[in-house]
Length: 398
Image 1 (cartoon, rainbow, N blue to C red):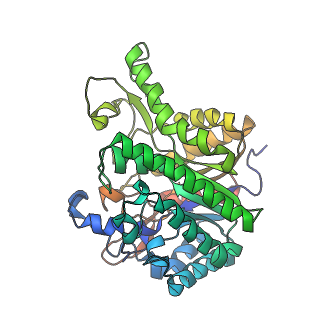
Image 2 (cartoon, rainbow, N blue to C red):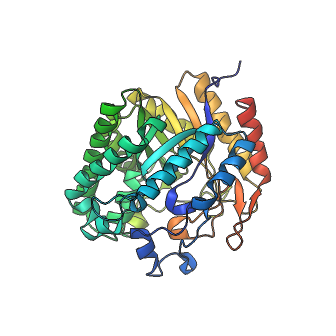
């Protein structure tokens, strides 16, 4: 018996800054500092802003029935309280094109990037951010709400906090436990406000957060310090946010990439302390990330305590040669089949990513796409692994 229901969501994900091209936000300003690998800048990215019709036609050809993408706040509200009607109309066309193609849109309101005017006043460090985010959400609800059933309020809030406010390797490059704590608390408030606004107008909407959850384990099971560190990492990165917000999540979005063995060492550097201990026997992606599907099953089992449906909002691999991606997809879908057979309520799987894209601090070198992009000509080429996934989508499972 097929464990996947007929309405299971199969598709892929993108984010505006990574694929659209020619954005003007806090990240494009930060890219000018030369801190991105190879001094890359997002620039034209994949040109998806102009080529979304072509890209959605490819997604349809590949059997997808769902697509997650983000709205670019900096396009919609380039100045405080001033809205770009052409940008809003563009996203209306994006949503209508997806519906016309029989693809369910899953819309992310905040996927890392911010308008420059928000960044200038301190973003999540400033209480004003919550009110401005609420006003932005209200605008989207009033203009695009009828076209959206699935909403993701914030993408990976603990990643924003850890990399932007604690280790400082992402904008706004803060190195402060206090500011990190303030930022994450404000994100909780902003998420809850967005949840209330959306449900006030659309009671049947399905609202969640894309949570980056890692499978933290002690590098040495018998080492009490390793076990303590793994427990602390699980609490900060996985549990704390969900404890604060699960009651305002109609579904839990799970972004799964990392099996993360940790080894305690005396250091004040969070980056060094949390550096994963690689297992040389395990296959890794082009970024050196371990391929460990069992970690996703452990996280799904752990999430059962929150009694919410789960959508895999991201799961993918940097694999330029496309040698590992087909097996990677099959093995993670097998995990989902096991989870469904155990009675866990998994509603969808969205592969990261539909297209090769600008991968934040790593620039353009990692290749996550089911579809290869030539960044000079913007030519799209479907990778062989995409046809493996097409078969899964069309057969509704393995």
